[in-house]
Amino acid sequence: MVIVASGHGLCKLTLPQPAPDKALTLIADMLPKAVASTSSFRDVISRIELYFEGKQVEFSDILDLRDRTAFQQEVWKATCSIPYGKTRSYGWIAEQLGRPKSGQAVGKALASNPLPIVIPCHRVVGSMRGSLGGFSGGLELKKRLLQVESSTNGNHPSHSA
Image (tube, rainbow, N blue to C red):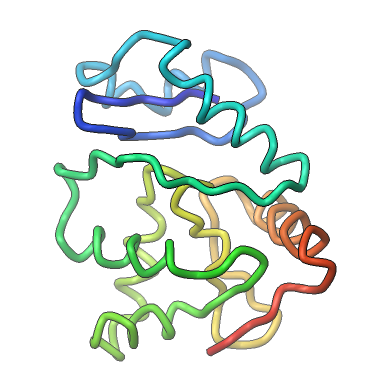
């Protein structure tokens, strides 16, 4: 896993990768903004580790999304409002933005989420029951994340359209 930050906040996070080289390849475009300091991220890393252990944690970190579009930022803000252990549809996010026909654009914005887990795009699913949609870490990891959250809550993730 690699975390990249600028002087303005977190910019990018890679999901766990099989090798460090793979993680570094995923952030190559961000290296000019990177702050090289493992101590700066101990708290974030600790919370992510706790998250993968099934603990409910908060990610209230300052994010640096300045180079992203206003629409992407709106989508990600709405995504952050989805409660832990719950899911919402792409259409739900589109409705929250007052753009009910923009479900496909919402999907594209989520596909470019630079901070998975911190911006919990894994909680967004298709409107048809059981349709997971996509996830940058793959559908198996998305299922695992949803299972982690539902077992922490003591129930299955509830879906709202």
